[in-house]
Length: 205
Image (spheres, rainbow, N blue to C red):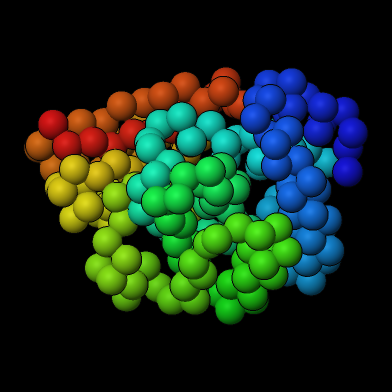
């Protein structure tokens, strides 16, 4: 663990301090599992707190925590498991992590258990489980292109939900290629952790 990276994250988002002990457990498990399965980019392992924990936490400002959230292709649990920790003070909040890879789903179960996050882990494909979950907030960090993410979220945004999708520098190009329903509003929120990144907020007009 980089102590300096941890301190930077806590300074930029003091609320992380309330769950710092749980995040330390999370980080240790991530580093242990990373040796056997690829969970995050190796270049980010010294910056887990800023590149992953802090980056995930910013989504908590863009949708109510007391809603039913679904994290598509959750992988290492970002952003879903970090949001689930913030949901601990919101009894009505739910977090569903959808991950088709059995090994990654096993990792998510272990982390969720060890940090005490009340997350539901689904080792299934998104298209097979989303209609059952009926999420009100759909998030995904790195699963696929924005067009497919909007398609996954469409039935739930139509009902008044919201999609939140962190994307990198190519997001404008992705959006020009995407099929976006005419009654949807796309808002680009500047990422607080990466000046070249944005969070795509998908809403119904």
